[in-house]
Length: 591
Image (cartoon, rainbow, N blue to C red; front, side):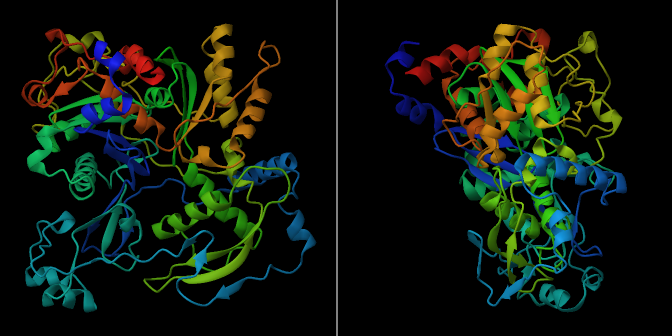
């Protein structure tokens, strides 16, 4: 503590953060970097593997509602009109009814026209120039280069593979994977969906784990320049969303320690890390991610599990809503835009949303360029006027406007976790499960007391709330049951995640939450705190601070312990949550 009192904060980070890798995985993106960095890398959390299956390109996502039902469509139109009334803009069909002619849409010649505030995305180069490159990667791992293997490919693709001049890359990561043309022989996989492992009958657990390992390993080697031979000199800080269940956390620890070969690792909760990232100790954390929005209250550095709320929608749903709104108003070009089968369209819509969507009263439109991406051809440019740009972000308050895609939950057996340290059965010995691969969990009774404050946390899926954001925030804070804490939390709301950057969103949250508080509650003030750090990276930054300040490292798990026996509760090791470091963090932040 004497060292903490005298050291300069920047020197402390430099001294202790150079060998700490902070990893904050999400459904759409992963934020990762050394604790000494000002900001992390923000990389799409996906991988595309070469495949010889037909059809050539596919996305490994099993959706349950690919089509909007009539009832959902009616609810969406009703939500639009409620929002239109609040924003003082025409109702959904009002303009269309008054205008018998469709809006004029012009095409702009040229391939590199500006789309709003950015150029068109380019198709990824899927070929490897090195003639010695091996195709023994991904799904073609066991196929070899026999004549039978080559016959499975058609036309020039097979010629390119057999000629040795141009060979397909075995796997492609990050944004580049999202820019692969649908005509190319690749399968895109997103190992995390809606805050959980993307497990289905088409995407087994082992493949999910292999994909996470491959993505993280690629980033460590290619982006952070940490080769396998030096990995034992680094420790990992996993900043994980509250949506993950106990077994998912254990799997990620296995990847970090066993597969990526970090010397040690520690887990911090995303909401809790956000508090420290902004120099607070008490706040209501509202995390608006790409696919999930979560709410949790933190008091004096301790997360309150009873306040946790999970909403199954996020920024990507706003982008989908933007497309639906423009098509309904006939402002979208007559082109095939499909966020699911053409992920490059998702990149374009996300950028349009970030550039033009905001929350404000009155009609909001913008003249911009929309791009079309067709079967590997150069991007087409279409100049148009987008309207009602303030409606889609309001879908966070009225989620029936968004009609989120539904994905199947993991099988029920996934939650029958025999290593659950939350129950009395913890001290019983269980035989190894038949579905557990050798070495996946080296020891039974692997305990993580970090989560012992979460009763039934890992024994069943998280409950998703069917309410809007304002109701979720209000319900979360009121569930604390103490008027003094409630008043403090209502004046200490912290917005994190990419959607927190939406212009006008802070006053909208304050207004909607104030209206959502029941009239019988003695609360009349709501305030959203300005973030001291980029809201997209605040949890990552908090994880870096916690890692730097953890001098005792009593919470850390070491690779040797994990591989040999796991960490037994009966061994006396106490896995402390990051709130034990709150005093140190406060000392550092206030210095």
